[in-house]
Length: 426
Ligand code: SF4
Image (cartoon, rainbow, N blue to C red; front, side, top):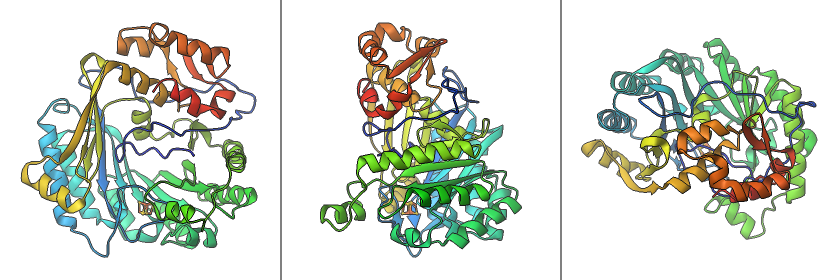
């Protein structure tokens, strides 16, 4: 129902994004976010690195992740470094430093800190890393200890994102997670002790059998661990997953959409009450603590994705078009190809100007602040009204979109019907 956006690992969302309203305690106008830019040039960009191995495959997971008892860590690191070296010598990345790095997966915390350090060092050597850059590592609470997290911090990682998912043992078991509630608590504690001031916890809600009170309890338990960011996703049943098969066989029944909306309403009310402002459909943080890496995606900026199955997007000159491409998905084939010449592309497509304009709009509309009309015009050399006038007029009339002080964003009703709004721009 609500998209988990890991664009480096997957293409931009093109469909379901139904969301319900948000309560800003009476403030109906979204606050502005930090960082990022919507202009082009020799600018810093975001780097995504995909580590595809997991200890076991969670039944709801449709990411490019593979259960493995062991993995070719040295070869995989060498493949990533070969890709870094190759891409750093080519347009449009040559001469541009990194503003964010994101290790996603899979379970990047399965790798040794020395491996992560080698990759960060290669990125620094080849691209340069801006002072104050955000360097995030996704981690499974069941795969870390003090030595590992201390090593990750020393490697240059300054933000950890734990897949906590739930604070109910039965629910964790149902979700196929390898970790326990106690391990989540311990992982958060040692992350703080290791010096990570920036800590995200992922939660999953609308799990069959779950109650709204249980989700509120999950939020309370998560907040008690002092993260500066919480992502809350509703459980989805994606084709190709074990849960999807079980759903088709009638062995598992997703909550109906009204019930899911009820959960989402509770989540978006509870998190802001605890100081985590909703700044994107599924993401919450106090002002200034937003995930800068993900903001790059939602602002439709260029990003480079390396590793098995990783996706990249490069805006074209003038910003009106671009190119998207993706790597070989199968880890062993990815490693072979990357080691052979530093490239592992499996496909790509040109994003034409009209597609780029639509993507810009629906990605930015995921953010509560939406986008500035002036940014649209600077980027595409045409006004928003001249491109989307008729379609947008219907949305303004239907009170799904708001135009306010030079910005456009979803109204509360628009949030409830976000799928249909986005469909107008795809
Ligand atoms: S740990 Fe994360 S990436 Fe790995 S299978 Fe589970 S949900 Fe997917």
